[in-house]
Amino acid sequence: MAGMRVAAQYASMLGDYMDCYIKGGSYKSSGNGKYLQYQVYVKSENKIYSKMAPSDTLYWTDASVDVDPVTDISVSKKSEEVLGLMCDKIVMKTKSAFAEGAKALPLRTVIETPQFTMTSIATEVKAENLKDSDFNLPNLPKKKSPF
Image (cartoon, rainbow, N blue to C red):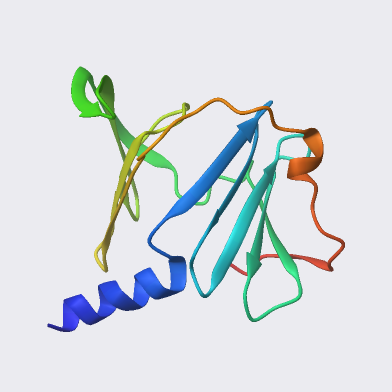
C-alpha cells in the first residue's frame, strides 16, 4: 500500500492531466497539480521556465545543459499504437532514468527510475490557432532552478 500512497502524492503534486501547446518550437504545459502549475519552454532562450505553487518566482533551466546524458537508444518502427496511430517506439536510456521519447512530440512517454515509473499518454491531439502571446511569461521574478 505504500506505493499507492506515493502514487497518489505524485498525482496530487503533479496532477493527473496536462494540456500542452506547441508553436514554432516553443511549448507550454499546464495541469491540475497542486505543486507544479505550468512550464514554458522559450525556444529563443533555450530555457524551460517552471512555476511552482508555493512561489511567486519562475525557476528556469538551461535546456542546452545535458544533466543526464543518453547512454543507449533503440528504435522499433511502427510498434506502438496511440490514438489509433501506429507510432515508432524510441527507447532512450540515461544514467539515472529510462525513458521512451524522441526529438518529436511524444504521444506516449514512460519514465522509469529506481524510485518511480511515470507514464503519460496523449488523449487528444488537435490543431489550434495559437498566438505568440500565448507563450509569454508573466511578470514574475526569475531565478535559476536549483535542480
